[in-house]
Length: 547
Image (cartoon, rainbow, N blue to C red):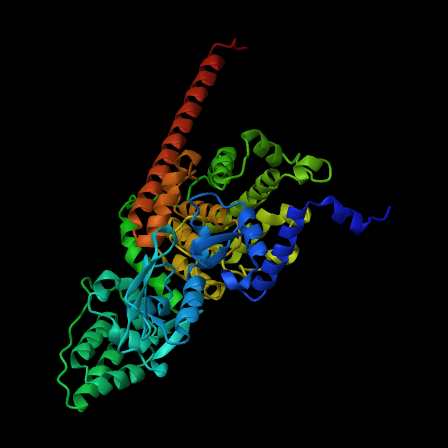
């Protein structure tokens, strides 16, 4: 029977029709890439309907940001996702093109920082030296800049107006190299030659700054640039004394090539974190097991427990019974219509399929393949297996599983914002390179997990894949499969957040090491139980009549 659109329309309430019209207006704005809006961009009726339904949230008076109706009170994700867009839209409306962020934040943005400062300082000749309170404890200060940089010394990163990298290095105070050493070093590694810096230094006869920057470049392993700066300034008659502004000598990144700031950051993070990780684990690793079949059976024996906790950490409501149901092969979307429609059942089925792919990868490592190379070749198969049930059910297209994410993602209530999609394609090969060259299985496990979720290469499943990576890398050193448990979820997330936000890998390392200790204790208990059972069997057998 044909439907009557007019009749269906009469069934809706006036409020529903208002919301539908307002959503059309919102969609039209979002088609232009907007996520932050001024009052003038909506009619009052549309704005009130969208706010009432939770599709808009206020930022300050007259400004709003996109949100989801499912957003819970206290969830910072909408603001983290929209903060840079707000800064750009608000400052463009207030200052036109005559604004840029401070030298320090300019440097951080050029260095690919994933963190947002609690206070963003804006330089503009139209500034009033006022502070504007923003959501979640953030603020914006508009500094009245009397030495506002000329247009050739301004740039942009995304939609945020910045100073150029060279000008920001010139204007950044000395204490930045101590307070934000990693950002400073990434910025230095992004400079390919001294030409632009030397020109700016010479124009102002900045001998002291030249000495500081030369010392910084030399400390970061870029001797050629340091020599060029000093030689050029001295040729102009300036007295230059090198002074290293770093409090702790930076970790030197091998080579003298200029790489993406995201890649440089990844290398620096690995170099600065690996020693803390290695020192928390036994120096003598078990190594390849003598009985590979027994090791793989132990992996299978812990599967139900592992799947329950790993899926539950991600918010899936699964039970050991459901997991056994899937692992037994009884799950069939054509027969079990309710299972086919169940997000939880599909997640359990995908986890089982991915788990089987991980076991194949572990066997390759035991056969002598390099663990980093195996992960490089196989991680895509893990991902595709994990979401194969969603493709079968028609919830995802096959093309959705083709490669890394194509959009920006945000981690709920986390300080860290994953790098942009373009950076993912630069960072992932370097992660595999670092894993390939790392001698310690414990370091491969901890940093492999952490850096995978730091990059967040896929739209979904990164946490589960990160835990699979951790266990595959632990297995490469002969360590048992280690379950990160649901009851420790808050601690687990807090330690990952500390590693991403403050660069502190120690708490996450301790968490993994303690989880591994629990896995090893459980394995010993199981072996003791098996030994006792064998003794009982022998004793029973000795009582049987002979003859």
